[in-house]
Length: 214
Image (cartoon, rainbow, N blue to C red):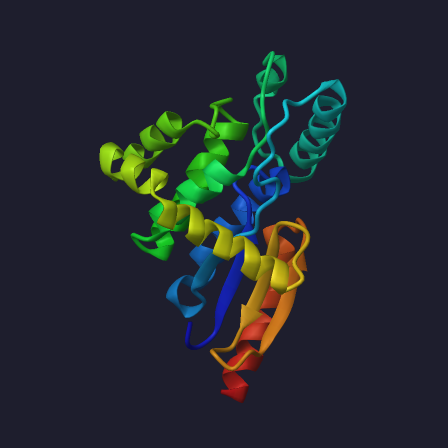
């Protein structure tokens, strides 16, 4: 992207990213096109192929409780009543990548809708049919989405996102980075959850400084 912008690195099945979702909404509302957001999928647990055991469930539940307390976001803890679940974050990430092709705003809306479906509604966002139904809610043709979702190019594009995040040294989500343009000048805004009341003043200061140097 040219000009001041943000790079948001997230995973749709990262609970702290769900907690950070209101901050992203507030940033978009405050800055709009003055500070556009580029979304990258970081890859929390892509390719996981084993079912969650009791220890996994207890660990994840603890994270959810911490996020709910810190952010006030809604969680449906009925998720933990499931007999079987494989916590593979690649399908949900790939769904966001496919919808992001329609524009970055669509990608961000897809991230939020999938997050809400998983955390607040206990929907299985590792399932292609579920993801197609969510895509339809956002105005996409479900059949066309499903075809794109299953195409190898979507898998490749998703893996490319993961690689960019890994090569940048990003190991935790959410991560928000501010950039000036295409010359590699970037500054870390946050690596981890922060409420909007902390993020927005910092971004206002950064943006004023960036415009002064432009």
